[in-house]
Image (cartoon, rainbow, N blue to C red; front, side, top):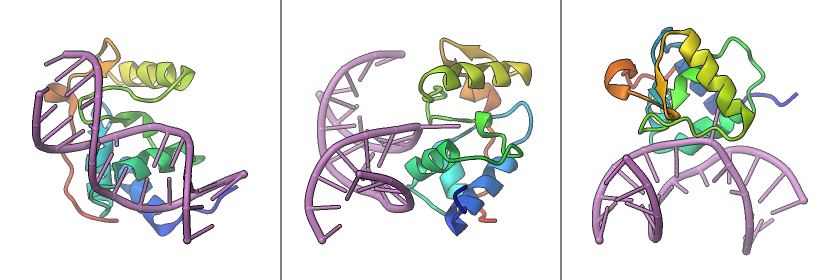
Length: 106
DNA sequence: CCCATGACTGATT
DNA sequence: TAATCAGCCATGG
């Protein structure tokens, strides 16, 4: 198993702060983790995730879309719906479910 | 070191 | 709303 870098740990910490029933975008998570402009790294970190305590499914693209490929996307949609989040046509209504967390690392 | 890839984003058209 | 494009950067070959 790969060891998590400091940046990845910060990313995971930020994702863990997203409350149930809310979502956050990759870019916002990156900022909250102290890595502004590195949204792709968030996706990369989540792709390599093996820590089940991280609610990765609450992270969507900046326009609310589920950009996760293949069956994993279906899994994410199911998990979101299970938390009461509406997913219409592969996307979440950010106006209702976006969680805006502080840009604080750790 | 170079190159390709990717769970992205913001601006522009 | 959708399509394009440039910028972003860790990871692996």
